[in-house]
Amino acid sequence: MSADVHGSGGVGGRRAPEGEAGSGGVDHEFLSLERELAVFLRRARAASGDMAREVHPELEPAAYGLLVRLDEADRQRATELAAWFGVGKATMSRQLRAMEDLGLVTREPDPADGRASLVALTDGGRERFRRVRDARRARYVRKLADWDRLEVAELARLLHQLNSRAES
Image 1 (cartoon, rainbow, N blue to C red):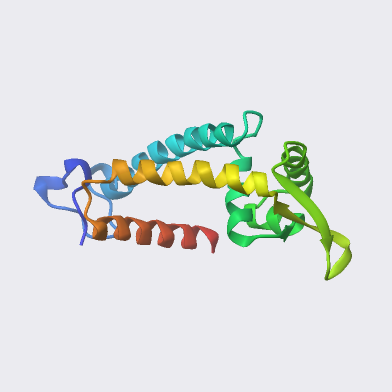
Image 2: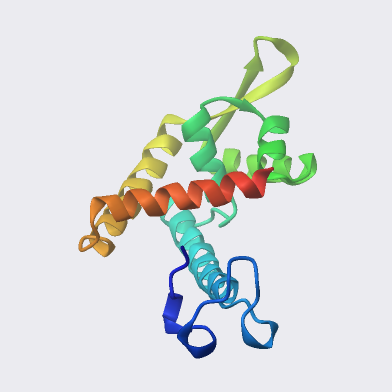
């Protein structure tokens, strides 16, 4: 069943059947989704930059996601990280080198392949990252304090579903 997001309504207050556009060929549900995702992504990019600077003033905003991944997955090859983020090896190498120079990550030989190295968070990098991540989570808790826990869980479930479909 579709919800009337933003009270846009359909023709005569009725919704267009699922998969069909409303009056004028506009699918209001997907138009609302696109608008809300654009706002959400704009805010997420800005927040990512703020969080990166909290970890280290010289850390690039895009590198914050690398910290998240390394904290979740522990040690990884640069090629695995590049594939995970969908970027080239040169881009990943540049970002990792900058993070290494800041003392946030370290490289160690891969025991499975001596020619390769594994990238891991340093103790200091992990501590800085987790401090910022925990503060971010506390902000989410405050912002969503009046939400029912089931609503928070449903939002997480729907975002997971959206992300999973985007990856396939």
